[in-house]
Image 1 (spheres, rainbow, N blue to C red):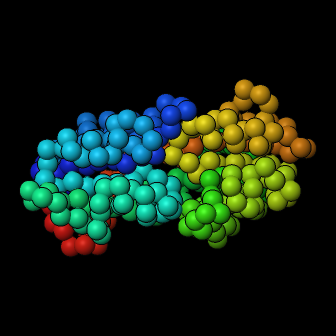
Image 2 (spheres, rainbow, N blue to C red):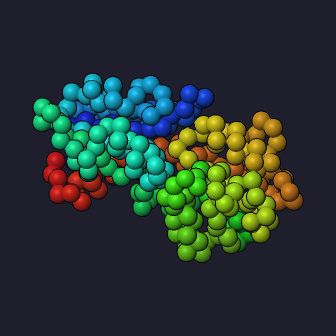
Length: 262
């Protein structure tokens, strides 16, 4: 994308007080983009852990600030919680002193997410015949917000339409079909699970492996013999270094959609 020497980029993450790994990918992507010098400033800010959202924005020197949520889905946090916390009034919010906040779509909405998920699946199970595979896109989901699980359903449908794998489903921690029921909702002898999460945090490294029935201490890889199947478990999609490029793409797409020029 074109350099923005008079603008700042703030990557918004969720974070967790339970594990530092939850914030690690967002911090790494921020460091990667800072080194590229596309923006005058690049920061990471979080909902649950320091550095928090508002203090980071208060410290930004640039008057034009792009906010990119490093979230998988367009759920409660990206649609309600973050805009409310930051006083956002739409795609562009004008503040005092000629400051402008430009709120981009979450990274999980990027059209290249399908290819990234396929890449993760191939990476964790190289050489496995796809016609023998049930691919499971594992996501959080919540019955409190139907849009939370929408991204995983969308990606599962897109991958299924390509016809590469024998079966593709989305499964969730908090809504049906649940990840714990993976053996009942899949039919193939090989099951490849790709976590549609930003980080290998508590969910990715502990909760999901336990629900899958992986041996204690195992957090990924494979094949693991579980319930008479061969199970493979990938790293969270958000740990892919490609996400740094997707963050830039979300800024570029925002500018094109709203007619902003560098």
